[in-house]
Length: 107
Length: 118
Image (cartoon, rainbow over all chains, first blue to last red; front, side, top):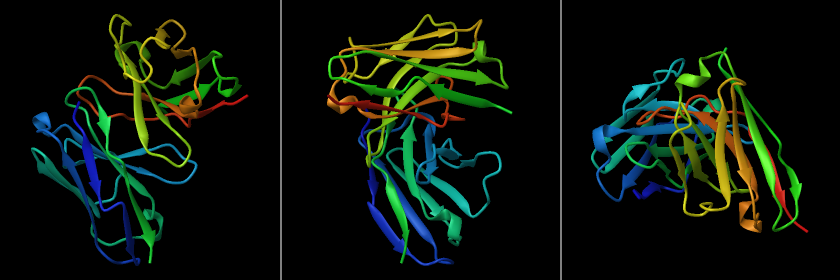
């Protein structure tokens, strides 16, 4: 099983700032089968990024993903008020697993 | 519009059973693998189970293997999760999600809460 470790656990930032979230894998994620999801309180997760760097339909271009192998990054270029949420990475190259999440909170 | 709607959650005693359903609409249900993911209160996402498009292949996390059974009825566009021998640690919101082999999960249902307590 591939273990995903997200850091930091919490990111305290102000609207307009840049957010950089990391996701590390215990072994290489094949073909960059890595996704990022956003989850707001009381709601289901929403797909943001798939295949490490492709934005899902309707996702604003301030969200971008990068990385390969064992190190992946989600960047939010300028935080909007609606971006404060919890973000999860997921690998789906083998039996799917999720990271523990990063909470982006208002500073 | 692609939509997944879960139902069947509720309060159950330890050792009890419950069946969750996930009704799909807006897409060709029989063409897609489907998944169950759960989230304990205040915790992260845990992958639970998967089933192939024709129901011929299934997968279970070790934490539920032997206690949970995933199934589907393509004629009714519905996914199921039969849960047995429920434990306190099974208490969570259960989400169904669409996702093919080596594909992300999209979309997700709104979730249904399972509470295990005496």
